[in-house]
Length: 304
Image 1: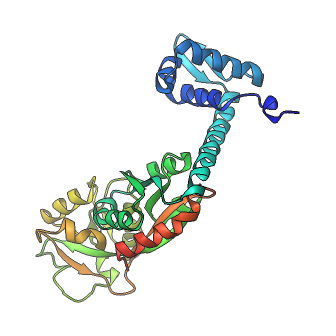
Image 2: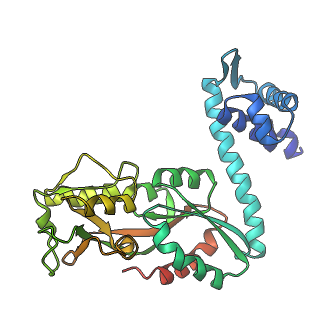
């Protein structure tokens, strides 16, 4: 029997189902899929008929997924992702270093590493176009799982667990404050215990760097200031004009402290640090070439 004749729905119908679920309506879904609304509605209705289950509830307030529809749409996402991987596998089989590679990076890495690693990748793989995006860890993990990006530059943590990854190196933390602060006056490396009783200014929620810095502070007995910064640039400005200290990743110091508004003191080895990785989906079409790409990134980044 023809296998295709046994399939209850087409990939196109699955695309329409996901679009309606994501956008909350048939008109917006039709516009996003570049088809007429009647055509999309007919295909969704046909899919519901062939699957034998109601996927959407329709009323004057809009469109909602039924309980059965929620499970079906999640499976549709997985099928569409696998279909995308199939297409990419075919392309990479011909030349894994030709085409477009989408890489995301967290904000506490992207502006500091990109000037070095982007040219290095262009030299190593001239036929490969790398498209970069910058998002916080949670958003990058979501995009990576959905196949919206191929790989991500992240700090090693629980979020990386579902993915394959290559370690790029360690990025040690340093203690930073305005030059007259007593905790940064000594030139010798600091023991983390100097933070005991100190009030530390950190990044806002959503930054993985915040969680890593909080861990250092908790072990050292430091407290956190109620006010939080939205970026490392803002964090540096707030600390340089106040009386509090912060923890900065070494990677960012030369850029964010280029005017010397802070005094920076390293920690005694083994210093607290974050580990940076390049992560990608297990079974992804880019799995094979990612090892070589990670090696180029590792050499260009020159991390510890």
